[in-house]
Image (cartoon, rainbow, N blue to C red):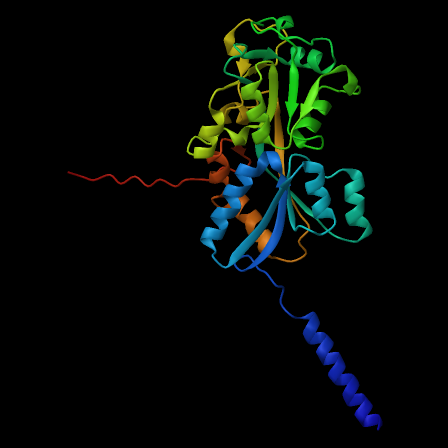
Length: 313
């Protein structure tokens, strides 16, 4: 009897060992995982994961795009393996991982910009950071109060969502504590910000620049129609048009455009899986080229090797 019990225990231990050593369901070239991102980064993120799926047909990313706070919360509760965001985790968010003894990784992958857009009917295309600060503090409320103001009427600030990275960035940048002093209108997406601005001459929209910066994208071309992208000056008293910068790729990389921000990919993956494969694709492979093509500034640009052959006559 004792011998039978011992054999049974041995078989049980072997079964447990086999279960614990079973391979993960995904690896860098096979499997499927959920990822999420702030909605303002959707064009960039979509171009990257779809290109990866094209290289590795046995992979599948189930992507959702949400306001940044919700996207990060999705990753924290293990409903997504990766999150693309415009900020690092807060101390309280880090404590959730620490409490559960989960190690996370954060990679700075690109520099993005908040584009300020107005409708074609609005001839104002220049603004200073000081004027923006006064708008967000409620000191400037009308277009004609701007130094180069040609438009008249109340300034309506338009954002994609109450919990979006675009709004959170602006409130933090301009140290806003009292929202009652400013006129803010929120819709449900960056696309809807663009649509609202087109129809309302007094609207000033805030969007992630990658929605309109990919020159080869039919969607970006369509969304850019009948819009002006404002030039922003860091100097409070600019003396030349050269003091104003738009969120073009070069201006992001050289840190000339004032409303720029970092883009991170944060992973909770515990093994070398599909999430790790995607991150490596971004920072070590052609992912940097896709970021560059989308009009943002990649942290690690894709190195192109050019071989020149000199033929002797």
